[in-house]
Image (cartoon, rainbow, N blue to C red):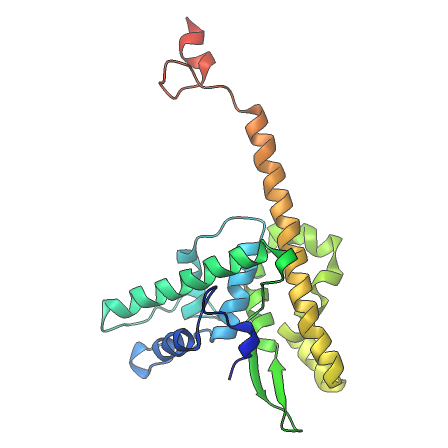
Length: 232
């Protein structure tokens, strides 16, 4: 089950999309040993669209197919299945990027799993989403390192619910229901903080590059002026 509040048909995956995605990835004849489930893919996408460098959706597919090594490829009998998976990945990719850029509207919601708690009430599952996010960080760990060192508190909840060390802590000291709900809210806030930080870094780098770029020649050649008619 999934947390319905995290699903917005206009912005990203619908329940039908998730069913189609997981039916394709986990089909016996596809031959994948460890594909990502939908919440893990969502966390993975969030990290990639938020991070320090641009990553193309096509680069993410290898890890969606093989969460452990990023190497195993599916054996789809119908090429249309591969195209459908790519389209679904791109749909959530674009929706996530758009939602994270509008923190004031609070439209971004992670796709957490959901199960039934001991009291019969819905219990949000954070582990898969956090594990996916941390997988996205590991794809370019050196580039993420400055932020991890500067603001380790932004990653505490991710580490707690997405790593083996964190799972051991949770097993030893299970959180209360209120603390668990607070952790879910923290993940939304921290994801937005991280996205804003890296977006600011990218914007500053682009502005600096534009300020030193040479003017193009007025002749329309597309070459910098000093190397075109300015050389005459």
